[in-house]
Length: 158
Image (cartoon, rainbow, N blue to C red; front, side, top):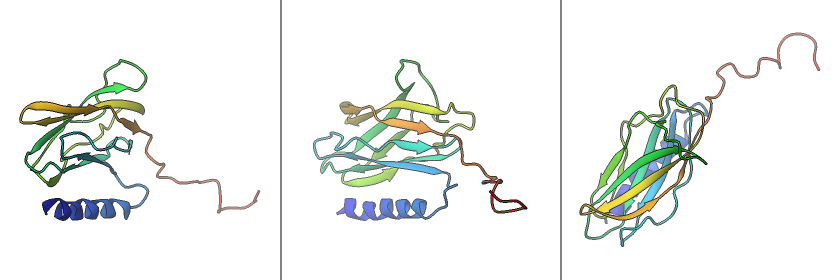
């Protein structure tokens, strides 16, 4: 079954990302389309920094159809104010039946607003929308490269 093989790929990607340091520049979540063309669960919130790579791992469990999953309509959370925190306006992932694929070449903009966003996931089969959901994306300031300069060196103490 191709989903099992694809999950091995997705699992490898997650392990590789998880093995990176805290300054890793990747954020990811999994989107699963079930056998009826519906989103199986609400994806986890994407937690990203400016310039991070964004990966949506899309699992298609539908036995007879490919799916098209579009990520769009980014809004500042709690408002109706549109925002474009990513360098691709509407990323799309096309996934064959019982397969897995990953978004490509999507990054948080370098000068993205820091804060919370809502976005819409649209699932289509055969050009017809079968489901939609509005999960979260949080963009936080990047970790400080300098570390904590006030401890562990010099004279004095506390």
